[in-house]
Image (cartoon, rainbow, N blue to C red; front, side, top):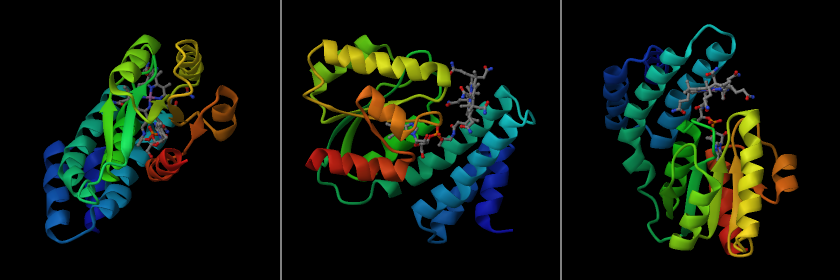
Length: 210
Ligand code: B12
């Protein structure tokens, strides 16, 4: 079994210590951080997603797997951030109101940081008011919002509306993502879309230079 498969399987079983150890081993063997992320940690988490969908894994197990994933993430994070350190721009990231998913949010935040962006991560269940306050406080180039439930996509639209009403829409670019979100929805609410963390970096880079 490859070390990537080994990490993915331990992640699925929620073996936090093993995931940490094996991720460190992969790093020590000289495996690129991006490969460890994609081929081991994300591969394992995708499989968890499938099993959750099929009703073969339940919420507590998913949370334990997510914790195991984070233990691996902690090890590769400094390596992903090792690139060019010039500041590319400032991004405020938040999972919208009513939504408690933060794995994708944290991953996108991490990749943006790796690409030289300063990221202010407001976390989960973020009220539009908190987003407005943060825009006033940090004067970001971009506000990135995540929604993982079809029901919380509505909160995304409301947040964009609140940004408009606060007169801040001309000052920031809005970027959205998350499993139920697509390009068409993003355009409808006046935002830019990207489907994953790598593309998020490309879109953010394009938006700050536009
Ligand atoms: C992990 C998980 C949980 C965990 C969350 C733990 C955590 N700390 O985040 C827990 C167990 C808490 C959970 C709870 C629930 N969940 Co859940 N969960 C998942 C699961 C299995 C994986 C999500 C994940 O982390 N994926 C890995 C990350 C890396 O991927 P990602 O989030 O999609 O992010 C990537 C892209 O979307 C994008 N992206 C994400 N955000 C952003 C933001 C920007 C700006 C950009 C540019 C890009 C971007 O880039 C990311 C990286 O590439 C998904 C299944 C799935 N297939 O998505 C269900 C899923 C999202 N959950 C679902 C449901 C129904 C729930 C619950 C309602 C279950 C329940 N009955 O209690 C609750 C809701 C709680 C709440 N109010 O939010 C459904 C949603 C269905 C729907 N269409 O609405 C899904 C799709 C599962 C399913 N098929 O039924 N969940």
